[in-house]
Length: 158
Ligand code: ADP
Ligand code: MG
Image 1 (cartoon, rainbow, N blue to C red):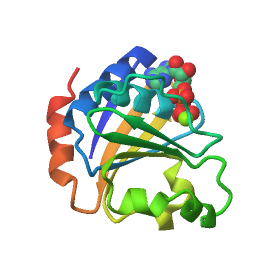
Image 2 (spheres, rainbow, N blue to C red):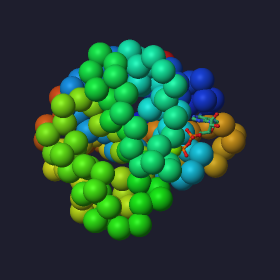
Image 3 (tube, rainbow, N blue to C red):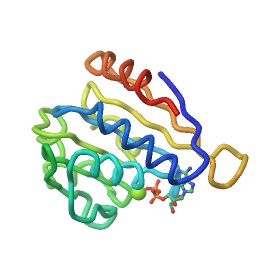
Image 4 (cartoon, rainbow, N blue to C red):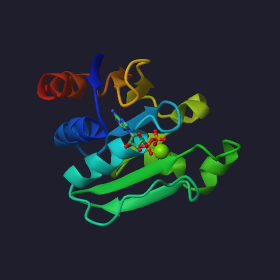
């Protein structure tokens, strides 16, 4: 586990770009935290680093966006999802169980039972200090991404 404090959206963007350099195909990343905490901003900047060129928008209404970068990038947002059955309809399990790209899931903690065994979890929290400050905590669920997380910790310094 490791934590970074960012003092602005620009700093979170920079952190995301560094993380993007360390992500590889087959990785699932879950992002949780309140509305406006910075999850989508983070995905937008990772996607940029992964070579996605078009606009990266929040998939709040359509549940999932797919982008093409150096690999395929899947971006889920479960905020408006009402039941786990709908996950089947959008192909969630196919994408998350054996991903042929990198998968981001905003609001993953709404459906903890539906997540794969291994993933990187990122939590975004306001610090209670300045309104633009965020505490961003990275941890691993399962064993698969333990080494990746260690590398990320070493690489993402600012
Ligand atoms: P979420 O997807 O978590 O609901 P967004 O990424 O859409 O949140 O929005 C985050 C908002 O907070 C943006 O308007 C961004 O400019 C602002 N913001 C302010 N400070 C930060 C920070 N340190 N990190 C990330 N976003 C920040
Ligand atoms: Mg969002």
